[in-house]
Image (cartoon, rainbow, N blue to C red; front, side, top):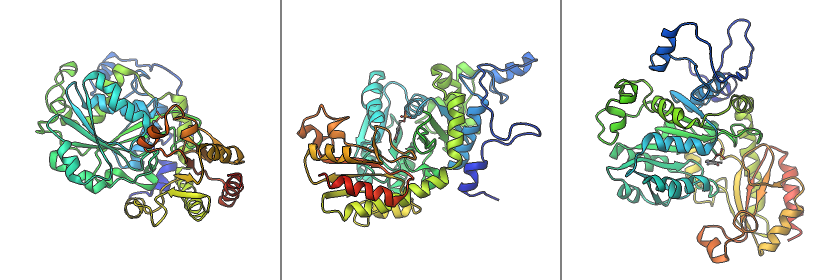
Length: 422
Ligand SMILES: *Cc1c(COP(=O)(O)O)cnc(C)c1O
């Protein structure tokens, strides 16, 4: 019997023994006791599962890893210090100097910088495609040095919806891994592994925690990718000298094991037990919250679309949005709280609107219980000229809105009164 997502949100990841704490305890310890050196040797040889040092694994982090892996339908989760470290560790596990990543250009700004400039310093190249481009465009970018294809389920901040089947078919044809950042959809609204993805990444700092309390990231290994005999992945199907000739492709969890045993060992970019605990608490209510975020966003988007002072609204909940059909297919239960819209007016009109908001506050964060807004042209991107803004896909009148779980009537009334100031 397979439990539904609502059940997994509260039950998966941790089951106490008689007399143990009902919820996962915060195991605030760097190290773990073993009375027997044979057991420790087996741990170091990856022959036995267990904890020995919190730079590699920790019981509180483990509970969250098991929960998110269950939610996504994967075989293993790896808790990371942040969403960015989850993306970095994935790239480091798969790529070497001279390799390349084929990625959608509509991705989170931090990931864009990591791929286009930081990884470039290690001779790993990023090749970008427009997420709306036909399959042939993606196909033409892949060569024998491509280690993975990357995209976001719902792009932050472009709110584009990924056509999984289009990208997955190209990846299957080439025998190349398909890695999806599922942060803004969450497994409640979409499970990428069911649509052909091989590895799923999260910034748990967003909806997964949901309270803007804890930074974190997660990598979920789908566990089904055929590395064996695939000439693209020698690091997985030839012996690893640093582990007595272990061949990762022979293990039940090839990617997850390699990622933890090598990259987590070498970087220490693991989630802290305290942050794992907060994220576990937050994720208990993930299914409830995503339902409310989605319903609220639908109503707010419809209100804004009908408002005379609004020029355009970008939200896949609107039937005239170019991603509406993809959202109906891949996100039938809702698209979460993210949207953007353009105010009829200049930069100062937008600033006035923002200052008059009573409920939604100005923040760079998105995707938590409280509604928040950001006007990139007067804040994060204020050093750019109008031409540069447009080239970056940010019109000067663009406002990004992350709809929270407040009462939708209150949110709409607040937006309405703030628009009167425009
Ligand atoms: C925020 C975000 C990240 C980065 O996560 P951090 O936890 O802030 O490091 C990566 N991808 C997406 C889609 C995000 O929204």
